[in-house]
Image (cartoon, rainbow, N blue to C red; front, top):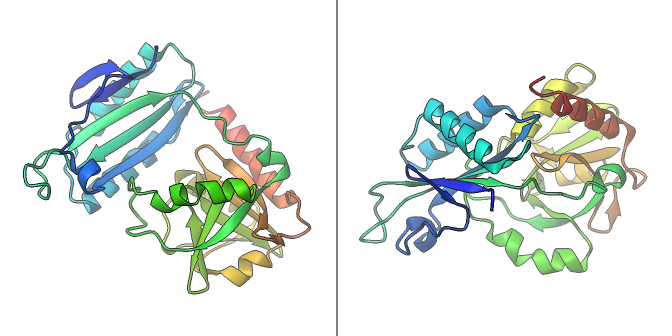
Length: 276
């Protein structure tokens, strides 16, 4: 198997077991992760992803055992061992092994090389359906390993032929389980700024959009979303993915919007030329 993993200083085969059973990530759900990929063999927005990972670690009071420069070398080694042009990297940082099952002694750092996922490429053309779900993530700024609600609702998503959950609380929309939400109203692009993970794809799309549209980054109501002209979601694997239905409510005319597809094209051009 060509893929490998780094764990606390060692590079191992991807199927090698690494965590002991008293890890705080397992016992207490005390852990965080990040995920990004290469384009043309070059990690995409590496500085942004590292800063977010570093910020998540700081907010969880976990000390990173490696510097950004050391991690770059690890990524290069893992990438070379894969023999693949394009790979995804998954970082996992946990509270480590705790003799009393509470206090952090030394965090554990895992970096996995993974094959690129195929996250519904057809959805980029025709759009996806999402289900409204009343919930706000705990510590939304941190990419924690807690995805309980997504896993609990997996069967229901399949039953309703929906791709994801749309989180909202007290009439305000925040995000999807693994991606950010945007809407267009009267050619104005609007996205939430509260109770969200600051997505790197979200950041890139905002940079691209400001050259072409009026942009508002502010709290967004659920009513605004279901009555929007267009909606879409952004993430590492989804890129710019049109959202055409929320529950039983179609968005706009129920098809991928022209302005969304325009931004999708801008983003695709950017990533396909990344590193060139």
